[in-house]
Length: 141
Image (cartoon, rainbow, N blue to C red; front, side, top):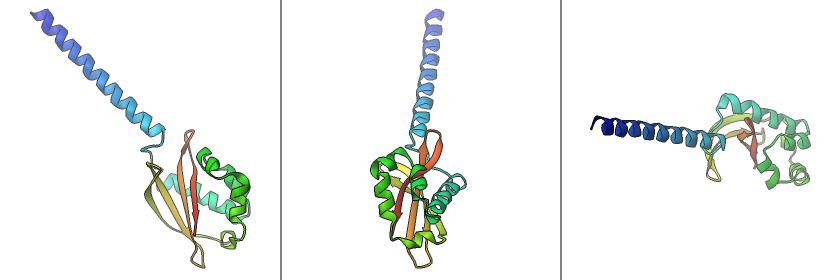
């Protein structure tokens, strides 16, 4: 009787340990996949600022190189460079407005919003890739 109670208690403890380990692995997996991980303003703002500065200084190819693979897949290098031509407001200083969390293809991401002197809006979304933060999306209005 004592032996069977001990075995049940031991099995229960092992099951609890296994469930806890699975929960930890699942949570870490979501975070590493970027599904629940959102960059803080302190970490993401410098990434967005650097990207905007590259655009301002006419280094659009370098800006494109600094983006995620998903960004590059959605918009090729030459297409990206062409899309920026004629948007002279990007060569002027942009003013930071705010950071907001948004849903991007089912993943939470922080949007860093800027505006130009003449009222154009620029939104830079930063997301994780290979243990670093990169620009994941750009919207210019």
